[in-house]
Length: 423
Image 1 (tube, rainbow, N blue to C red):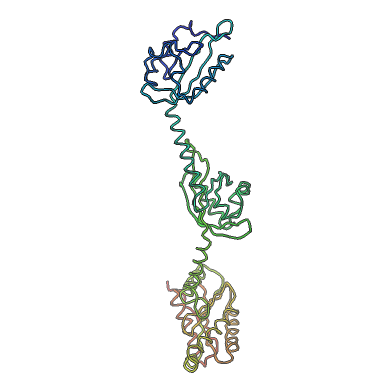
Image 2 (tube, rainbow, N blue to C red; image 1 turned 30 degrees about the vertical axis):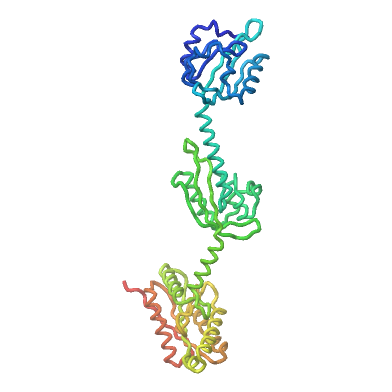
């Protein structure tokens, strides 16, 4: 349908109220009208444009696009939109977008063209900044020395970097088909999901925890996981950003260091520090009404004679044999420890007095046998039951029982009793 703006009352009034530049052009592209915004956008007074071709104000590199748009209107097109650089009177140019509509006469011939131009400078600057930010993010994402993933709210791996694929052994395509829940150790999943729920509820903005992953090969690895949430403008959750560091080697070193700090270097049994820690746990267990526990204290008989006659080498050899005898016969969750030069201690769990006494007798006989008769042992035994006092009092009680075994001829087991705490 032919449209004529010439006869529309108030066209110029409407054009002057718009924030964009409005212009009218003859079929050849020359200006017949320009709104006052031309001065604001391009530095030209409207009168300076009248009679001049629109092509005069197009950046040379964009002329082809503008001519193509004009040709579309000439050949029957109704509306075209073209981006180009409009020359500014000061000598620069303005990034602009022109929407041109054909106005035709009764025969369908092009009578004039109405053009609305808008300044794209700010919008394009925002787009360029956003594009730069995206490129910076992608560069950091893929160059990160640790695994990085964009994770969906359902736990799916939306986007991952190469380092994460190396850590877990799955390709990016394989990770896209699974969730973090599927590769997390079951014992660690609850703590992880609790933090996720806190993120979704906006109770926290991020969290960090150590957890275990199963790799594609089925190996268990330790990772340090740091997670933050990304939200939409309205505050609703969009996705998570997860950073993953493989800390398996660190955990192995920590475990090794912990073992060194808790083990006797000669026998590899637990040392006194760890024994005292376990004794405190056993006492707390008893106070809470836990099942029977027993405490044994073993002291080698005449060990000084062996040490003095054979030297420390012979003494250490004997100590190792005793340690081996204990290690072979004290089953988990019980523990055996070397707490001094020739003193050893045992904590037995889930046992009654008769069972504890039977094991003490077995240890007494085994030590004499395993050392070839070079050594016997005196053993004090105390059941740990009821409302027990502190660890030091418990230890003194079993120590007294052990010394009674020595005073009564050595190489025997004597049962003592730990007094309950005073009210």
